[in-house]
Image 1 (tube, rainbow, N blue to C red):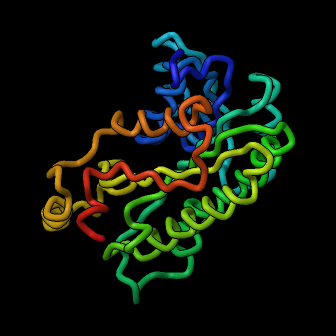
Image 2 (tube, rainbow, N blue to C red):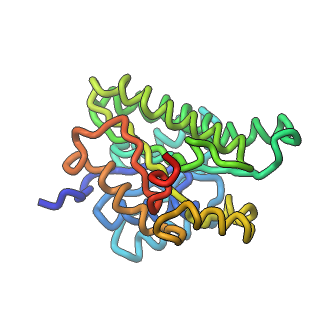
Length: 254
């Protein structure tokens, strides 16, 4: 028995056209899931779908703004028509900024909190109700090592990801009796579009000092954690877990 076999399952990956989201979406496709890539950028979303299909999987892009409930409700209906319902939901939209605390404008705070936290809440309402009514499902939220203890220079991002951790554990308790598991992955430092601008030479040196493995993660190194949490065979008794994939960073900061 393959513990990670997702044949017959449908996975909705919100933000699946991002660097990290696409790597995990491709893993779902490789292990048999129908993969719905949900995002605003059709060009990058379609590119991810082509890679999944080229590897023998099934994928389709669905255009939606993750912070608009009506978009998510529409996309859920479209995915259900295409894939017969949603078994796996992954929330990985992300936005970051290194604006000094006293200079953060309200508009920046609102924008980051919307993308990183509000989108998770809305998706868990829309897709979570669908899963609860079906009596099964796996929700995987993408958090960050910045969620606790918070890291310097990314105040709003850290606050938004702390909110993701809290929502994950709250909803794990709320949904457990309905057969829906809710977990989060806490990635360490993986160079991606949202953080390249803040990775100065000084910042990189500081990160390496606190990372026992002395390197950044590769997007593919998140695939095992994603598959584990997605599969009921592998993680059927796992919920409310914040699974770190951080090269030892968490052990250094405790």
